Length: 122
Image 1 (cartoon, rainbow, N blue to C red):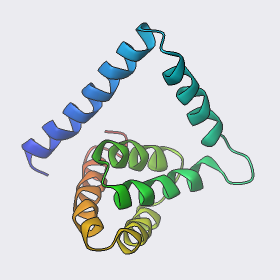
Image 2 (image 1 turned 90 degrees about the vertical axis):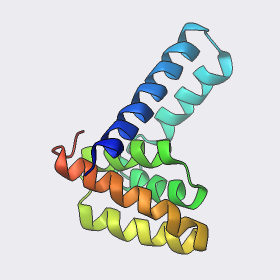
Image 3 (image 1 turned 120 degrees about the vertical axis):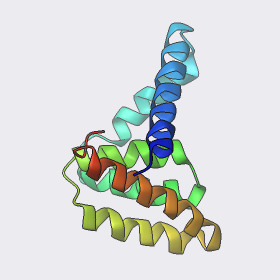
Image 4 (image 1 turned 60 degrees about the horizontal axis):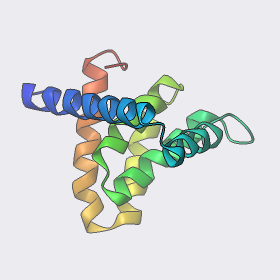
């Protein structure tokens, strides 16, 4: 993995943390509602969190959200997803998003490699 990609992952994480903290400190009601919805959406119910994170990886690829890919691949791994499962989900996201999603899938593969090289937790 090249250093520039490591820096990109760090930048994504720092940006997400910075804006999360900013939104929390601003006490924005819509952001608070979003966090509540996010928690409810990813809580184990009929589908376990692991499955929901895999779904989110595929959607992230289809909509080309790099921050989403980084977050949900990490969360999928932390929830017990295997690399082979993530690779299949990358393929599903690619199929659902068509040609543009093949470009997104390249980023997703690099994120998966990043987690592999950094002990799956980054």
